[in-house]
Length: 354
Ligand code: GH3
Ligand code: MG
Ligand code: MG
Image (tube, rainbow, N blue to C red; front, top):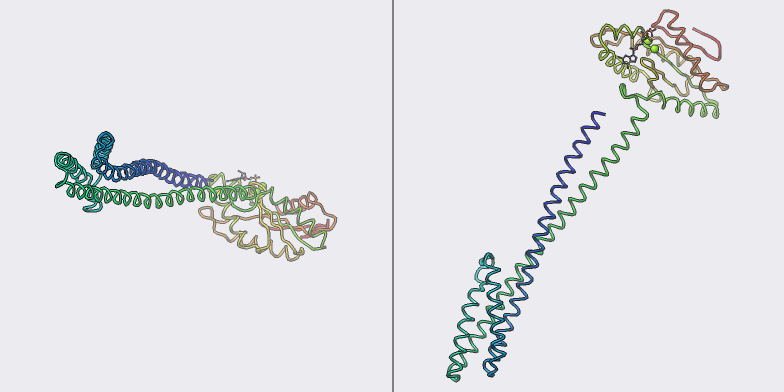
């Protein structure tokens, strides 16, 4: 359970970290969108300036001053607004290309030429059209520059979307894995004893019912071995409850290594254990139980030294039900205690054998 708490904390930190990154990304997203919007507006304005300069020149040359002044005011306004808006823009992003100031200067010169043109048109006409063309080229270069900036921003935006998606995926994956982990752990803790890690009483009884049905249907033998630590109260009283807990865990491990893989071991009481031996007849079960008894007797329990166990063994009979079987193996174990402990007694088919 402690391990589960630690895991929960790690998951909490991981998910928090990725959520934080997600929030940072959302904020940056907002900034990107704003920039993109401003840049797109600039492209729009610059395209308007580009076309309006040509129109202004034509209107002035064809002597339509009212319309020409309206267009002039429009261009003045657009240049001023964009000069102000883009004053922080790094002009050297594409060296020599982006220069609204230069356009402004050329535009001023065009207006002066137009004034001179109205006084004496013939010698100035070529200079006016050349200047107008020059203005168009600068405005066009500015549009291309701005489009380049937008394309770059959009490329960053793609990487952003990718990392955003990955971030989200990590969060979802971590949560899904954690859900599975918790589910598995809960399922495991429902059938395992929390102290020793072996099966608990509830699971064992379910398994026993299943084995009884299987053995009855297929006419197969199986045996039960019940065991209890001798004078365990004394161990607790002498070495303390914690040492007692350790002894229970060590005993479970010792039995686990002595039994066969197919045998099912469970803790059914404080210091009481049971083993189900599938496909096993009584003589073989007695042999295995004796092996376990000796194994425990010789096991060096830290600080405590040696401990002994008393065991009861019985074999399943076709007429048995769960309670009768458990009662019989319990009686056998009780006899082992009565007869001096650190020994085993067996009861087979309702008769008592030693
Ligand atoms: P016997 O040989 O007759 O079995 O004697 P015993 O002292 O082992 O039996 P008794 O029933 O008198 O005492 C059982 C002891 O087991 C008492 C109890 O404190 C201890 N016990 C039960 N569950 C646990 C546990 O989970 N941890 C520890 N440390 N002790 C436990
Ligand atoms: Mg005991
Ligand atoms: Mg007991």
